[in-house]
Image 1 (cartoon, rainbow, N blue to C red):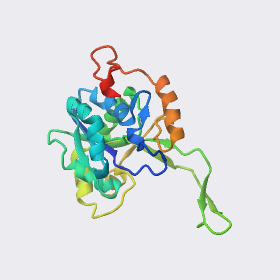
Image 2: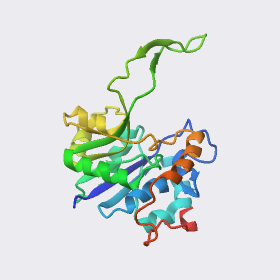
Image 3: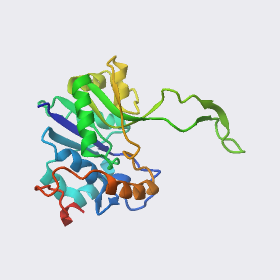
Image 4: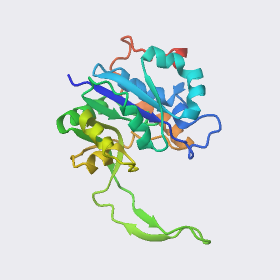
Length: 250
């Protein structure tokens, strides 16, 4: 059975979330933190041997005050992030266990992920070496001019044919991803698949679901609460699931 390490970035600034109390991965969603909803789906799997959570340096003290018990009991590894997302992931890769065959990267702020979707993307990653969830772009796309005194104007309408919106999880052969980051040379990638593409490896697109949305605003948090209610229930429910309704996980 292939073994997986899961890296979960949660070190962003959450500027668009606009909550004075929480950054989006640590906001409360249906009784517990967003990042715990994301983490539980992977920690319940036998093929996941490690989960690394990336947090910002300035969040560490508050995070450990609130979640130290969760981290200890669940055996999660913590790493402090860097300036850019790719810098953060690169730091996490240094902690990946050598016995891991594949690395899956999933946004901590993307909690509406179903068990069967993870199974699908893990299988695709094993078969192809690199795979990510994505959804086809369906809306009309506009490229804007720079803002001026009258506001923002449209420069052109962009052809959406063959355009897809990348999601996570993204799954890679460990050696491919390590090689991609070793050759990054400071390049600022917006996702990890871009780095793997840059060194010449094909990346497989697997059609995901619009429900697998990333929380960016407070409105997204409310919508995520409704989506969680219609996702398939965890297969381990009622069989010793460590994420049972317990105050420890709130």
